[in-house]
Length: 398
Picture (cartoon, helix red, strand yellow):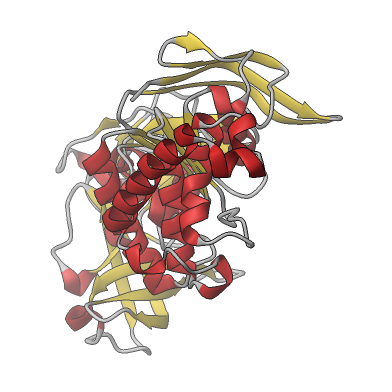
């Protein structure tokens, strides 16, 4: 096991700067996921850690030692690729055994004639065969050892790729979107298997994906990237509950966060649709804000009591998404053009709404994510219920 540290790593391809002074620290034995939209630099980042690409600036440390001068096979890392990169002409056994053969047998012992005559080679190959079979049992692919990749399903190929990486006992596992080619049901199954694998082997995992569900369910911490920079490094809960920028808030969460335009009044109180919400910020009057509310925080009035520490807006039901135990409700607020918001409620409560009736959507001030003009999260001071103008106001579109 080993820690991984990136210090001001930069990388450009021609005039396109892919990574911009990236600092990232991964703890020994941690499962860290790098998540972000396509083109944000996450795959380039993991390839630099693996030694498949070399950075233009900065340094990479593994286990506290700089590895910038080392080639990929010298870094004690193993990488699982999106397309698994299995040798199509080899059996499963040969695919898993190949990295061991390459490291334990020199070129001389891999020559055809020497392979037949060398006692040392026969002994080493017996040891490798035992390790490969043991790994196959661990991954439940022992019945597939004589098959070729073309005869395997996507999930089976994924296990073979993991076995080929694990058999080397690397200090760090690197995974570049390894589940993206699997169907939805198999992805859920493989996520659970990867979590169990990490708990069992305790090795440092760095996992790259554009799928926020994978990032939120599997990781100890998540690094959210955009535009070649790490915007936030935090636990999944912190990333969801306290996004530090509007970009992070928009990317993390499904359905996406609702964003409203607000302003600051002369007393520093947040205004939404011309009415006050009991939150105060240290910004000049008239400053434009963006106020985010997660779908589960924007609730129809019949699903709970109206709080005195928040606000309310009236809307009409536009569309339902039935997810079984709960429903995603899409509402339209009055205005030109109509403004859509999303709410997540329990199925029983959702089925009670009349599509033609006007619904009051309410929220608590504590659930508001307030972002400034630069998109950064603002520190807000709460107001108090019953303090004159800071009591609940109905929020209407102007």
